[in-house]
Length: 339
Ligand SMILES: NC(=[NH2+])NCCC[C@H](N)C(=O)O
Image: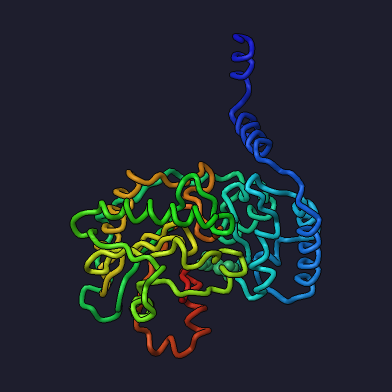
């Protein structure tokens, strides 16, 4: 025993890390896919190769990568087909892949890693996401104190619940269980965050449409999600929580298990951000979230990995917005997305 320990200590840190990665890959069950899935994959890939697409999937799914990954499976039974089918069906995707379960990020790393590196501008497969750190929340101020430009401000993040796979692998029973967990946890929120959970099941069309029109609720029928098999058993397990002022919202089981959203009229980013941070910190004490040492907080879509935070303003730019391509070009220069 003693010898074993001392010989381990002699290894340098890098090779220990390498061992850890190798071990993690071995641990993951990589049994072969069935013939029907393989046939679908081959047919889908052939068609996709003949299709024009600017997606990252198109850029990185080479024949070699395809052949290396097409037979693999996660222990949840997810295959490469589950990863790529949204991108195959929607050639206008920007990215085109999703992780059906957390293990997919490891089993299909040869495809995920280069796409993550490209989308997240240089996050290499050897990189590690830094530990969670909300920063100095008081350093954020009002972006538009005179109320001239910004109509509303929104900051959101995504979280996955430990112990559950992502949408395509969830059973109807799991959806129900998760909704129950989420709604009972949120009912414990107090003060400004106090509110109510509204399940999609049984919600009238009028209420649903009003919440969508006011930008509080997600829309139904996103074709990218549908093709990714992420809308099964809809509306079971889906719902929305909001506080009385509708400045704090939680989406349950839309794209991610949880989307936590803070928003309000005007440009007070500081207030919006601080509300989000205190809500997430509070919820985190009661609901354990899936976190990965390398990728940070885990989400269904690789675009959201890491901090999962998206901050946005609804802003009036009538002259610039008249020329959408100009607007896109300028936004791109600042690493901003027009939505
Ligand atoms: N909601 C999202 N995850 N959006 C980002 C990606 C959406 C879609 N899968 C695409 O690749 O274009």
